[in-house]
Length: 179
Length: 130
Image (tube, rainbow over all chains, first blue to last red; front, side, top):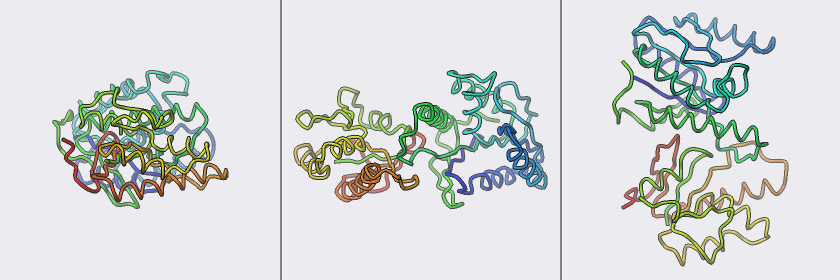
């Protein structure tokens, strides 16, 4: 089963996604981490989050881009956090997929879903600020929204998190590509 | 009149075309809308409002008159109110006016649908499009 969890900054989306992962009661939990440790601040942040997740039984696997190349144990629960980092990395990091970002991510998610029992993907809602950012940022927003829509289409469940409360936009509806 | 709202890039227009079976010939972009040639769907209503404000024309009156002559019109509009208050006065006026107009339109609309990641949820009125 594939679930997409989306919310704004500090909406509680990560915690909600983690609780979803834990509720499946499958011991093999993989956390796909996407944040590149660019500087000390990033590194400290990553270390703290990793420590927090350890208690929740997640094994952390770093994946900054090229999701397709990640090996996922059969029958595991995978939490991928988050698409906003992954899209930025694919678009701008060396060896990223550049203009093929959406296709690369969709292919990668499809492959993960073949092995994992349950997949939870976290993404960011940055689309209602009304700000007219400079053109490269607009390009990024456009790409992220397109990836979000495609993953939503593939998902069994789409959940928007607002103030830590889930709003279910989609449940079941179409056949799962997972499991 | 029906209203379809949602963040940028959420698939609002695609949703409208899908449920109405209309094609792009029925759509005008609000940024280029000429009130003498109104189509069944007006996309990017927030850009129409922006254009009118730039021309120092009161947008609500214009929009009300469009509705009067095109009762079945579908307005598609970005939600633009969730960022930090803009420092530029014009940007503030645009954001404020757009939000207020959406409130007025929502009250009289046959339906209000919010699209999120391509998924439409009718949050008020009659969601039967055909």
